[in-house]
Image (cartoon, rainbow, N blue to C red):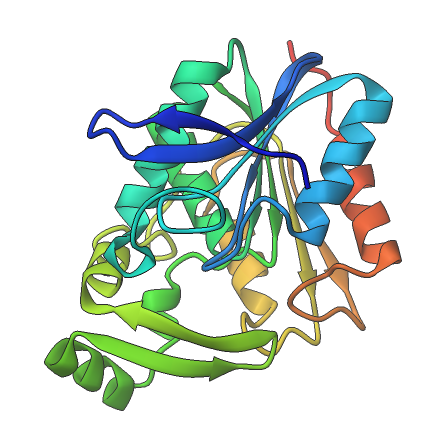
Length: 245
């Protein structure tokens, strides 16, 4: 791991990032919940970008990875704003957003906020609205009552969710409305994903207005989709996107 570069937000907190120059559109990797820019998918894409001469931006949300801040102070909207600050400050021209799990939710938020900048979307086990469908009623009550909830996940260690994050998620739900997104979209999802059921990707595909939407289901794939074959499929999805106009 090379030492990341730091970019200050308007409030002074510094975000860690790695920006590779090259041809555009710039690939921007959006990590999942409690993940960072050193994950297998981000590094595999970055290695391919280096070979292909493509520009790429990887980064850590505030409180995650090498960025400053308190993880439990993070919210969905706040992490979206981190991504927008990095894109607006560091990237010229169009971007291809690659969102993993929660990063797939944030990529939709960015596509709605900056439609003129987004050339394409690639979701990997995209998890929009997981504050809605990902918690039982009992868990929601406990979360609202106590302010935080720690849960076990099959794909990794226990994770803490705060009341502030949950409320931010509920204020930014996507799956109950049409999404005015017109760029090409590719949605990869493992059908053995125990954390984000694959049918959420097919529902998301139906909500997106663009006609150029493809859902790619990996029958034996899990939530991470980080095996060599999964990574090759992710790279192929990015490489196969239509040329920007």
